[in-house]
Length: 254
Image 1 (cartoon, rainbow, N blue to C red):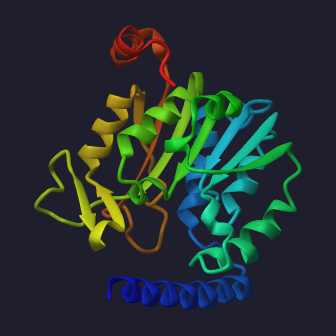
Image 2 (image 1 turned 90 degrees about the vertical axis):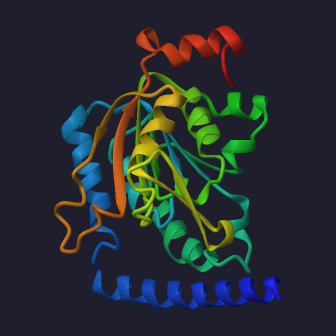
C-alpha cells in the first residue's frame, strides 16, 4: 500500500515537472527569481571578481540556471554534485534533469566536472578527491536531508579558509516550533524543514561564522520570506571554538 502511494506521488510529480517546464520554456521567465537576486547579492557582498580563478562547488544544481550564474564568476574549477538516482528514467526529476540541466551544462565555459553521489556518505578518499572550495552554493537541498548537521560539517570541511557558503532552504510552517531550535518532519520523512533558529544553530555547530541573512525574497511579487531563508556563512578557523574543539577531539575533521 505504501509503495503504491509513492508510485502515485512520483507520477504526479512527473506531470507537474512536464507542465511546469513547458511553461517556463515558452515564457522565458525565470523559474525562481529570488535565486538571481541571491546571486547578485553574493557579488555585491564579496565583489564580482572575488571568486575569479577560485574553486566552486554546487550541491544539487537542479535546472542549471544557478550553474550558469556560477560559471559567470570565471572559477578555476566548477564541481557539480547530485545524487546518482536522478539519472534513472523512473526517477521523478529525471525529465527535469534531461530537459533543463543537461542543455544548460552545454553552455558552461569553465572547467567543470559532474560528480554523482551523496556527500554525506562519501568515503574519506572520495572527499579528498573533491578538494577544497572557496565557494559552496547549497540551495534548495538541506530540507531533503535528515542528517543536516552531518552534511553541514562535511561542507565546512570541504572549504578553504575564508570560504563562503550560500545556503537557501525552506523553513518550517509549524508555528508551534517556529521560534525554537527545531526541525519539522513532514510527509513521513519526505521533508525536514528547519526553523530559522534551528538552521542558525546547525551552522554554528558545524563551525561557520559571520552568518548573515540575504534579502533576496524582498523583490519577489509573492511573499516567500516567511517560509524560506537564505544565508551567507564563512569558514574562519582562527577564532572558531568549534574548529579547535573538533581538531583536538577528532584531528583534522573529514
